[in-house]
Length: 200
Length: 116
Length: 162
Image (cartoon, rainbow over all chains, first blue to last red; front, side):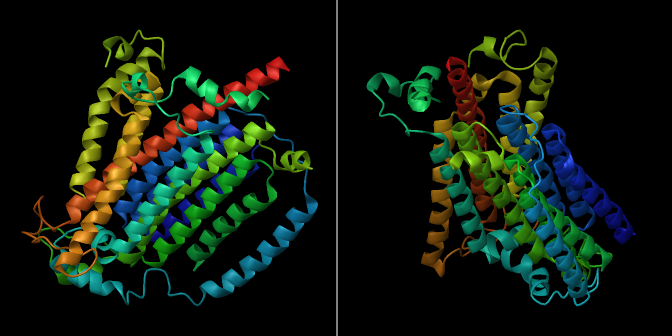
């Protein structure tokens, strides 16, 4: 039952990604990407992972908002396809070979529904007793494998730092005393001043 | 078996979009689809037939959870990976905005030509 | 917060329909986000999911009422302050564990299972991560949408002048 439903969902996701990749209109492309993500969230839900389903559906909304608000509204011109024949043909040959070997390789994996569970049986058996948290996933990401979460926080921090460094041209101005009362973002004039050398 | 294979097909389509498309936003979308496919693959490997979510309730013993619960370790890894994917996407979007500011187009071929 | 900014007649932002619905929905969104964060060790959810929900709430404010209202709730400077201090607190709590044994030790008493205050340090980590994810995602959105928009506007003006 779960397998059939997942099969249908995966076909839906593949069709959605074909639309997202091949359509000319950028807005419908971004929205098709959102459809793939929402179907992924449903797939997580029926696979017994409600934590990830919640996270995925919310992250998907943020991805849509970022892509539409930051890029599509700036420039929505449709880029004419000038085929790079070498890239397309070589990638198609490579992906054909990749799929053949992938088909051979997935025969070796444990069949669907029978995981190995060598490490994580320990977590399931002793998670509640060792950490006191009823949600075993939370107990893993915050107690057993806290280093993962530390690294994750670092990556998020660095990505924000990178975004700010890339988008601010000259960094923050040194503020005078009159400016210290003003909480918040730079005013339009100040940003205009900061981005002034754009016209040169 | 067929589910693993379909997930890999989704992965391949994302990589194809990453290589063959000229629009930078399309490349970002391709990377996002690749991300989804890998996350789904990891979760499918940890699924157990007739499994329940790895969350204890009051009227449930530890033995029941260990017998029926799905694998919690891939879920923890994927939970981290999703948020990292969002961070990477925002960084890529920032780079795209800077490229647009410099070359005034999102077209990769155009940018290569302007670069000389 | 000036009341005229959040009124439906304010020219900034979207239509009055969106503003009215947003005004009703905002409380529910924030309550749900904090519920997901605080009950993360008992029910599905946790810091990541709840923090993203809260960030979506701020994004909704920005889109519906314009950026002044959202910046009045959380400015970009406060977002970076919260982000940095949450990262610092996360490492500091891990370092406190060294005093009791090793890094990232769950040192407080675990308490009764299935209580709200239980599981030692895990709810505290959830709150920290929720704050961090909220502030950082909202800061990213601000940087991309507001700074990015000025870039595009200036590019257009420069093209017009030419």
